[in-house]
Length: 202
Ligand SMILES: [Zn+2]
Image (cartoon, rainbow, N blue to C red; front, side, top):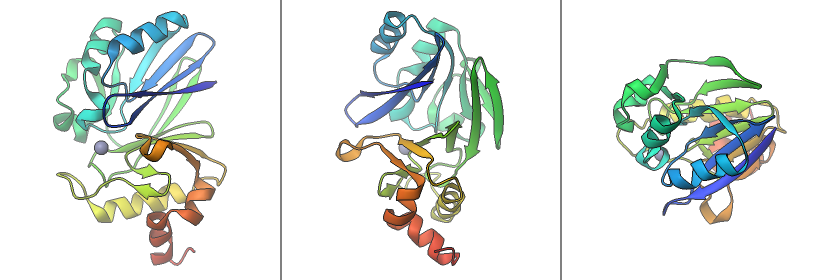
């Protein structure tokens, strides 16, 4: 399985292209659908599904065109539907934890509300796509409509229980960095440390 980070748009958003044996998934495709469609074509990849970590505009912008052109479904947690502005006919809406087999990919969706009510992290094997829940050294904003600081704390605690060598891939590349590990974040991330300390797990 290969993971490619594609930075698009003016807000350092990271789209992830995951592929294996000519089959592909996209996580948070936004901003430049021409580029993404050309990339899939150039690499001779068949897109099987799209996943959204949450419904904020910078993670979904223009993605409806891609869903329309390719006919694949976008998976979105139902609580973020209104936020996303996407037409539900292009979506597979779901609620709660999910285990999905999509072609060669086993996809585990972990609800991690806090930044938004319908925010999730998407786990494929040892890799965790964290959207705006967890960044290297930080967590997502919790002062936005549908944010909830208490839920964020619970979500960070949940992620801290994952194996230490879990590789994380965040929804933005702030300061040029979008990847880390759970083990590193348990030690270095003040928000995750606080959540653990409150539960006396540190
Ligand atoms: Zn966001």
